Image (tube, rainbow, N blue to C red; front, side, top):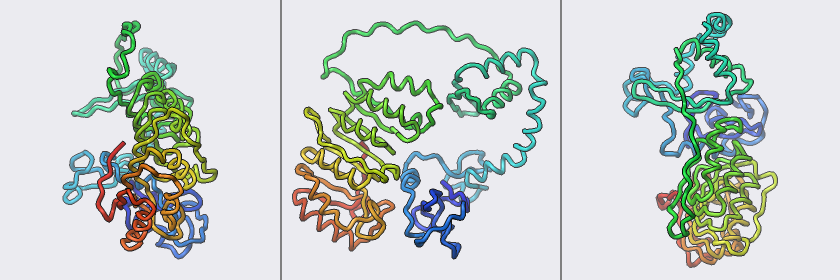
Length: 408
């Protein structure tokens, strides 16, 4: 992930991503290069030192993902750059490499597209009209050991329409017949609960799309959601209505869940899941204007045993802890030590927050520090205060104690 100003790769030190008051994200080094306290993108001024601006935790979390896409392109290997490529080959950040490969092409293509429709033969015209008039197309691209798949939904977007014309003219399409599928055979009666297998669903790549994208995939996932026990990768802010519907469909049976950037409706939906035992919830700034507070659990709910929280407002976090205080055994909470950065980047009274949350069953607390204010001495002091109010719990810091965090 690169800074949009200097095009250098972001990191957690001198190029940590900062969010200016205008909403733009810029690396710390770019902000510090100028004597003026202003956003280099839009020139809007701000009145705090650059290092006091909040970090972009979404980008920091993406940088930590083990399977995130490679960020360099090797022109010698014609492939994503490996660590060895960075030492000996011609490697550029992927955005810069893309600009090099497309240099001049977009301007030339604009002129060529004008006459392309007149060059189409009749059969090609029929193919183009077919591509343009159907609701969506599933694509598979294969070449030299690689395969890419995806779905293109037809809209009034001129780029999509121009793409279909280009595909018709350049791809030498051939027509294949797709046999109609009959209804699936009737399933036997429902199995007793103890005989039902664990059903898992990972929706990360589909949920990180806009409401008009991948509609067939989303409909299929909604149909498969009932009966799921493990649901991960639910990004709520891209398509809020669909992600809420997915949570509601899975609610009766889901036991383990991870959600990112939920809105209040999503939080209330997961709060109503009767069998939920393990939850990873990753919030964002949209909840901070009016932080929602969750009520006590309805009767008959199992209650969480394991919870990992990042980025929820303080009031929302505390209401969640209170609701599950009688059952929660392990808590991973991203929070900083004392400072002026505000919750959760700094917190000078964490022991009071936890004491007031009624964590009667807690056995283990891990304090996550990524992007937060942290130092060895303040950390030791904070953990000592927490141990006094949670005498039966092990209290650890993921950095000082080198804790390897588990997934949901």
